[in-house]
Image (tube, rainbow, N blue to C red; front, side, top):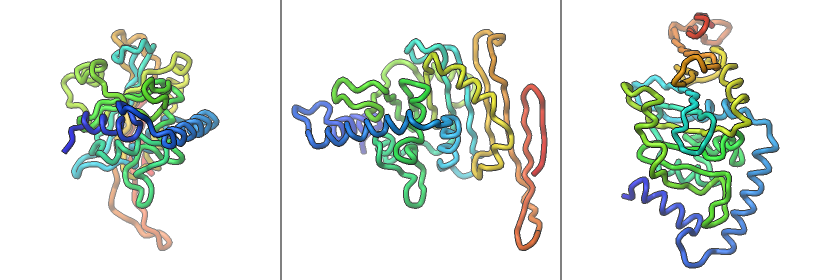
Length: 277
């Protein structure tokens, strides 16, 4: 069985003909057309990238006995070495990327959400995860031994953007990521790193600060959602930290032929809130 790194090399060689002496003109014509359509679709829509990431986490599969959680951490530390003024790190304790998932995210037309809506990262017409390109030029994914990045700039080996995976050799390292997450804690299975475009930092901070506890009412899997900012100088933090938890009271009540139950939400931040629905 191929290692994650060997699998990525196979994708680069078989899907994008990188490293081959000759290229398939038909394949590349199709890929160029696909990327052009994807780019037009991506930037024509007013996509709320944060909701896309939350929806992807909601669609993920989780190990038994684990309370599904999603954490957003904004940092000014340049752990990717891209020169970005800030980076958004997304931590999710899902099962992690499978080989099928990796094949899916390295394409624009395939999705593991299709059919029975298994876990997928692509979504409608290749948007979904790729909506992150609205705020970053180089998204990184660390999951189940995979450590890759994509770029919105065309790959120099095949001239294809958005879909060609590059193996991450140096920055960031798992140690760099742990330093942001908290060195005493074990990293969740999947980590997405988004070095932000300079003109998108304000937008990202606004979306992060607008997260409300009630969002968990519309999620069936995610039980914990947190947002915080990590800076060496805490006084530079401008994003309101919040930790949202949900607990379900499974004592059902009959009401006009419908079963109902109570959902308790608690959020801690600048102001602690607790409410029931």
